[in-house]
Amino acid sequence: MLEKYLQVHPEVQKAIQAGEPVVALESTIISHGMPYPKNIEMAKNVSKIIRENGAIPATIAIIDGVLKVGLTDEEIEFLGTSKNVVKASRRDLPFVIAKKLNGATTVATTMILSSLAGVKVFATGGIGGVHRKAQETFDISADLQELANTNVAVICAGAKSILDIGLTLEYLETNGVPVVGFGTEEFPAFYTRKSGFGVDYKVDSSMEVATALKSKWDLNLKGGMVIGNPIPQEFEMDYDTINNAIETALKEAEENNITGKKVTPFLLDKVKTITDGKSLEANIELVYNNAKVAAQIAKDLADISK
Image (cartoon, rainbow, N blue to C red; front, side):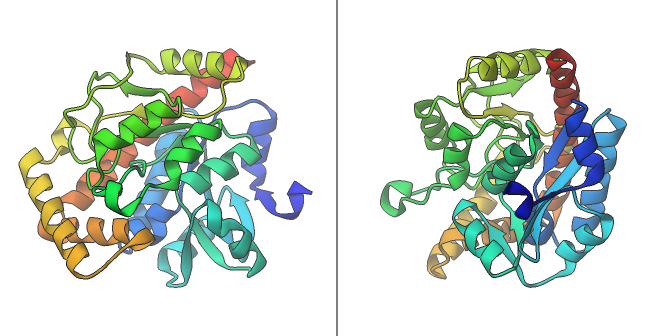
């Protein structure tokens, strides 16, 4: 029945069946997260980095209502240039399929489709989380519930700094999701290496992460793991600069009554404008760094699972 909906790229399918390392990649970053042509360039470079580090890349999206795990270059180009691509989270999947729409997958949806295909490791920029003032708006990303329930590890540069990072970490703790720092005791905040919040565990190698993941899933402890991998120091943005930009963007979003799934793209675009494009360059570099670490973790997980 699953084959009716899910189409796995032959190269990705072959790697999964052989127990070889595969790294999933989301597509919202291509369609909604970056301008053309930077988005296409970034997507192709990420795939290249994953291959250079011994794994197979699998970009995930929905094309004409078909769930795709592993895109061709032409499909990536299509996503990066089309205007009618739905930002698809868990709730959207049935209707994107039924209406044969094109959809870019969020962290939550990428996790779902990764799990359906048998891919266990996923690299992204930053996870969604609890939005600021969520105690009034109840604006909490579906990414967090997916992390609580779906067996996929997410390598990220922390939570996007437009969010309430403290409440995001509290939510993950309540749902039993391990939050680890890759070479750091502090949870990274996307554009910056520091957030002021600690992690549950510091890990110093990809093998340490892979061993913990295997143990977790061998014990049937359902859910994913957040591996916070800080942006490389040379690309880190100034903490005060980025936070001032976020505060300005948040105020403008409130004044313009921008809510729901429109909030994150709006805020990221505003921060990019305020920082003269430096935030976009930082975003690209942190994604590259996450892809490299994810490939190493996937490789080690595949080795110890054989």
